[in-house]
View (cartoon, rainbow, N blue to C red):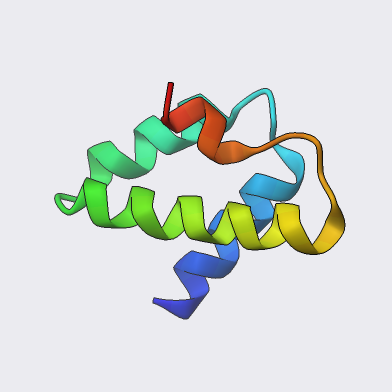
Length: 63
């Protein structure tokens, strides 16, 4: 669980171009896709808040 959250944080940090592809892949693999997306959004918000990123992962997920 923690390892997956760490992976999501890494994805949030660096893979801006492939983020939709990876997110779709995770949702496709895991039946509980909505739960993973929620953790993903939380992880991205924490990273964005701590490091002051202009890019916000949640903006992609939530139109």
